[in-house]
Length: 156
Image 1 (cartoon, one colour):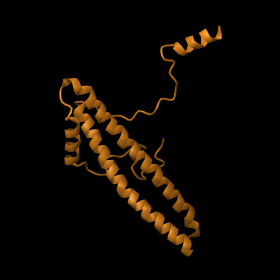
Image 2: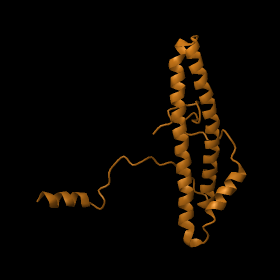
Image 3: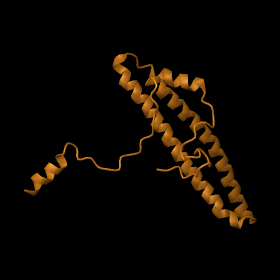
Image 4: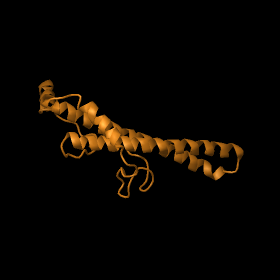
């Protein structure tokens, strides 16, 4: 799934990656997220803490992607209406879309701050590891070769 935005447009940097430098992360937000994760104390919960931090990164990343796609749709709608600008009905529709887009930009700032906090927390919880988005697998697994064996058995 792609953000649907172009480089230099919205939360993408010049390389096409998410630009997380647009807004500083609140130290309070980081501490609150750490407090929730560290509620699960002890060495036997180390894996759990890591997974909670990883899940938060994954979720906040997906929220940014989703919002980016929605922003792209609104922006495209505005571009389609632009040639008919000057008509009262079209002007009102463009104005509504523009107001919606501006509110989405503010929401994107908040989502970006949230993701930045999640990234920072993940790095702290994992003692220096940096979270990386991993796209969904595009191949199917044959398990332990069982699919091939099941087909062979059923064919005989």
